[in-house]
Amino acid sequence: MQYRKLARTGVEVSEIILGAWQFGKGAWANIEDDESYRTIQAAIDAGINLIDTAVGYGEGYSEEIVARAVREHGGGAMLASKVMGGPEAVKTGIDACLQRMQLECIDLYQLHYPVPRVPIADQVGAMAEIQQAGKIRWIGVSNFSLEQHREALATARIETSQPPYNVFWRQYEDNVIRFCAENGIAVIPYSPLAQGLLTGRFRSKADVPEDIRSHNKLLAPGILEQCLPVIDRLTEIAQAHGKTLTQAAIAWTLQAPGITAPIVGARRPSQLEENLGGVGWKLTDKEWQEVSAAGKEISGLLDFSSNMWGWAPR
Image (cartoon, rainbow, N blue to C red):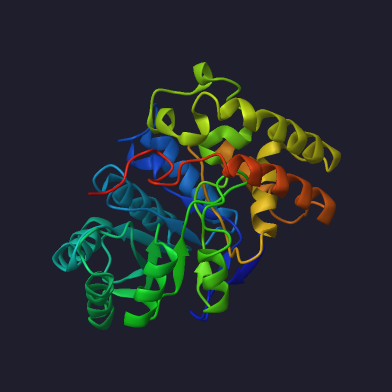
């Protein structure tokens, strides 16, 4: 495993962060707890030192699974979670989070989505209060626009930003990611594999499971088909390097300007093992630029009025 500086925190983070949405079960099919525990512990053994979860992942169930797996392993990983809501939700949310995870302080606590009609200063201000109370080490934001980042940073020190980002989903590339680079904020993007699209599993809508992925805009008829030539070309590039499509998609993300470490999900140790092969090598500059340009064209076709799954918090 290789490591990069996590903004101005003074610590280094593994180039792959383990995402824990699937462990919460709620939005995902065929998840088994025993397999989840083995995956989390295998990630720590492989050198992954940050695991990202949220109360929204199975109403806190993912938080419990992650914390228990790390605790039974004997530690070895920093923990991150997320909350959504106004100031009171933030303050009560952290207490419930710490209770579920059996912690006195969590390393990284993030605003999962900005709440409409609640000033960003109030939301971030509540985060600053619980930080001053010693309940969290660092403040992060997720799915924030450029202007919301500016408002957040004017209120408190923000260490991380978590936008969706992959070959095809490039909404935040020229604004948010650039702003973060200019202001010393680590970018830890989610969905570098586009929920399985960049693993090669989905060639048509019929291949997509009836879970959260069935609502993914990239997997919608008319868009999915246009992604396939890019996926096929990235597969060719991967094979030329002795790698898989999955590994090439992760490597592409790691090479993108301003990216610290992508959050990659895995439901079983075998998936984790393949994901780890995305670290430690690079596409050539020409290959990276070719895939980047082709993916950007697909990105230009997408509706960014709401999130990747077509819904937005109210």
